[in-house]
Image (cartoon, rainbow, N blue to C red; front, side):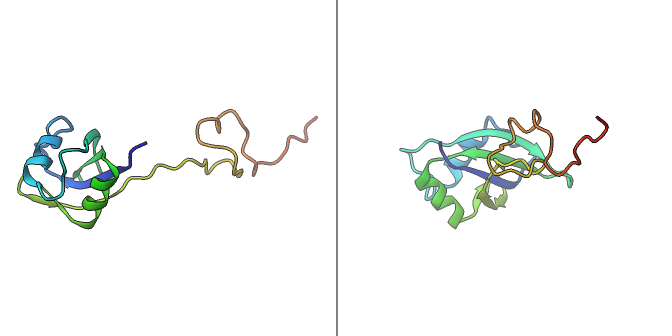
Length: 114
């Protein structure tokens, strides 16, 4: 699995389709040709700014995290994008977010009506 990064404050006219070509053209010292970069999705935060999540190679990820990325007229910050694998509703280390809906949370009281 390739590392994922999130790029903050991407210009509004930049989409998930054209961001790869823009990053390769404007950041030749960071992006190498032998590793692929792929935009996964773009979303808008509460403040109205757009952010893009990308999958990159390990060498490219290391270079991107050390520098800032130029996209259009903006200089954007990039950090690691991590998704939680543990459900916070169920207090159990072996339960992940996928099967947490099938289980009852551990912090609820047992049913004493029987």
